[in-house]
Image 1 (spheres, rainbow, N blue to C red):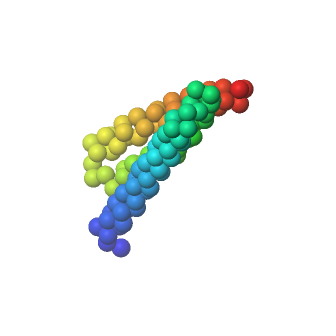
Image 2: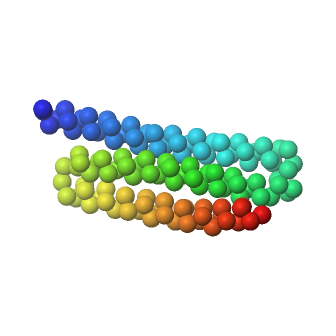
Image 3: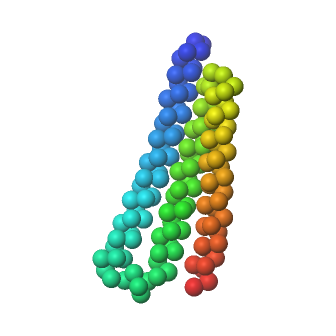
Length: 118
């Protein structure tokens, strides 16, 4: 099998998975924005304050899912990286995204405890 074809196929797979992650994040942002605007226009934001936490919880879960797809795409990208410098840059990007995902997950766990207690 020709390595250029294999490299091209991996590149297409990587970009497709990253695109799916971006679509997931974008759809979650639009959905959460829609929920937020619904509560603002209905005038229920003051009376339904716990709904903001629910919207944040939903958005956070979607962000984590999208970030996981993007990290997976970056990991696939390490197989197509031509040199150690590119691998190092990708490793740093994956590390930053993983830390971000972990931080959001911790906040979501504390937020879900608040939502379940109220």
